[in-house]
Length: 202
Image 1 (spheres, rainbow, N blue to C red):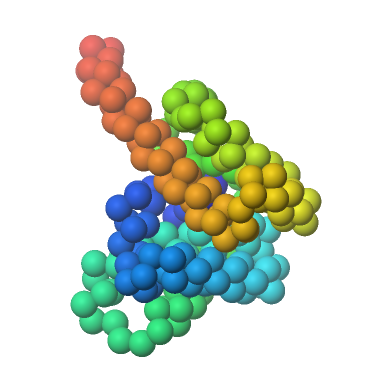
Image 2 (image 1 turned 180 degrees about the horizontal axis):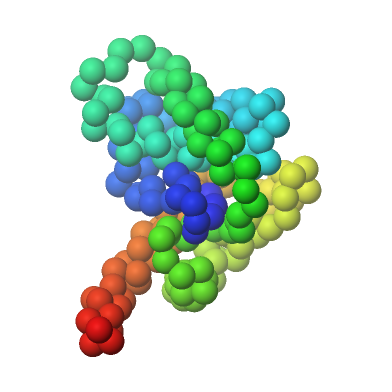
């Protein structure tokens, strides 16, 4: 790792939040990465079993919801972190069912919410152009296709890069977080201009 409207929790996971999440899963970075991938795979299976249209996005939404609440969770939670993710699933499902009652445009890459879709697309293009060529090609190829075709394509992509699927998923997640953060920065930059423009027109 998504829709600009309505709000989708797969947006806005920062690198710091991701690192803190891995640290909560396990002090050993490599083991934490393996646990993360396992949890994400199991969450995806849960959403597939519930017949959702976007199980991978919802798995990411669950993970990001937990990551944002980690400062509240970590001091008091006792037990296997995976159980907490599973507890959050039902809330994500409820929100998903509400969204799916009405068709909404979806995007494979993170775009912040509550702004003009056309502007967000411009920001996404700009953010992608700022990435190193290798990273830009990776994130584009990672989210190419859908369903079973997407899964097979990611296997081929991992083979071409000479890495496993788990490292590929972790790298794509980090790039997705970087894109989300950069898009949010661009939106913040134009916010004062929009405010000033609106004041003059009144």
